[in-house]
Image 1 (cartoon, helix red, strand yellow):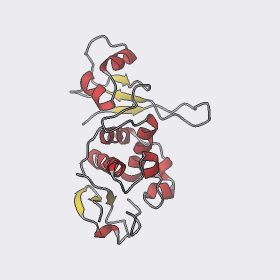
Image 2: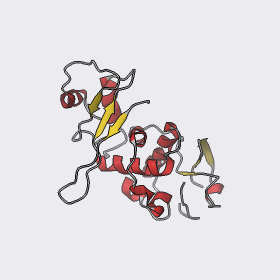
Image 3: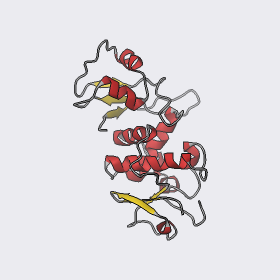
Image 4: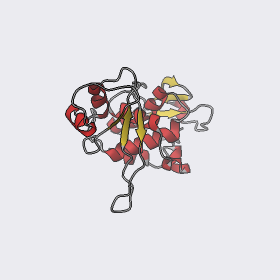
Length: 207
């Protein structure tokens, strides 16, 4: 759910490994391990994560193209840094996954991608900050920031949804806001033009 103020303006699988501590005491974002599902190909997996096919093969000691269901493939950490919509870091991926998990962990996969897409749409809008951290932590915008649930560790679905949104999938068709009509008491947000509904969330554009 979004907290808004009047006048303010693939079916892929992965596992998340625990983050090691960095030298400065801050944890690195979790390493990503893709769990192969039927129909996955190495080329598709490389494209999903924004890595080269050669680096993916090298990281997993694979010479050819054969992969098997339930096989675990390490996504090269040093390479998973840029996505189709711009130069996003691993920290951006992790933060977006945290927001998705906190906001939409009970929603379908497409519903979780939609929440991530709202952040990316805001990033492209002149009315919002210009980095993912600034958007996520903008005052009075996201409930998880206010209640602390933004610090929960995201699950594999949230990471998949974040990566899908960062690679350009927008199920909302350009929404800048979302809210749960059963929970939100914000009257202003209900005045915004609605562009769709996915699961429990209503998606809207600016006034």
